[in-house]
Length: 471
Ligand code: 6PG
Image (cartoon, rainbow, N blue to C red):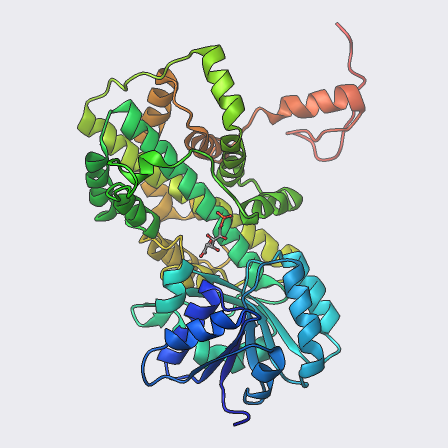
């Protein structure tokens, strides 16, 4: 029967399939396409009884069976596959149809596609979806941007399938143009930063204090019951208990220390550099993933330098408390940096990103959800134009309370030889950001000395150059 389905999905990998099944569970009739017909069959067989779910092997079959205006989403790998699907779809669509790219596309690709499709009458939307496979099935955080009319059309479906916090759906219009993908990119940058910070804290707990996996589980369990409650704290807690099915060890101890990356963290850093926004913890996290890949060189260097790390000579309970506070402090810095980038990008890239909504929809469903987001929601509610979270008075009070422990952790880590690049970079960013008078006057003097780059003075307005004397 034609025109009977509410929503179509192109690409039935685990994310596409789960999101579609989630829609079906909320009463929408859904149809999915994948070239691999087995995936279509898998979709149908995993549907909840009584729901309307169909898998097809051609795009045309899918498009023909959608209600008008047709609503469909691609969840295919970023890059060329997205352009290929658009090319295949175009002859099948009509004016008014809505096509969503729900993958992790680079926002500049989304801008090109918006431009390419602007005269076709097709509504194209870039949309971030966060929450992994489980989130897609049970309630992700959804970041749509671009065509506001198309968003209104999709709103009932997106609100139904998204995560809910206090009854409020974790989806909102993220702004114009490629705002959806931009917000998701920055979400991932923050994700990289927090993961790096947790790994450094893990190193200090495990090697600095000598905790075993059961003790690590207990520390993260306690943390997750307090102010550090977050999805990433929670999964870290559980990782320590996972047994390896090939040996008698815990799985975490059998995993090679080389981190992969698909690019969204790097894109965040690249774009922040372009916009002149310092996001040092995210930059460090991206670089440290790259460094981790050089396992052979690290092995050579470790035998060359023979520098040993030592036990941290601080009473165990005190150091755990200091680490918890340092993690909390540096997590706030990570969010502050990512959100300051969004604030700047919102105006620079003409996106009009509603910052209050961003932190509201990150409270549930997504990878960086944490109770901290509630505090940030309050901060942006009282000032939606806040350029940096660190300027909020309540957050400033919290930072002050944690500062001594943050410094203590970095100091102990340095004294005992542990690599804590992200923790150090969070602290250094904070120390610089809260400093009214930085030593940058000297840099200006040097620039003017060798390159006549000019400088401004503290006492008289204007631009100055000096013929510097060689002494
Ligand atoms: C999410 C995740 C998801 C994925 C990223 C990061 O929000 O659900 O961010 O999008 O984990 O692709 O992956 P990499 O670590 O491989 O870059």
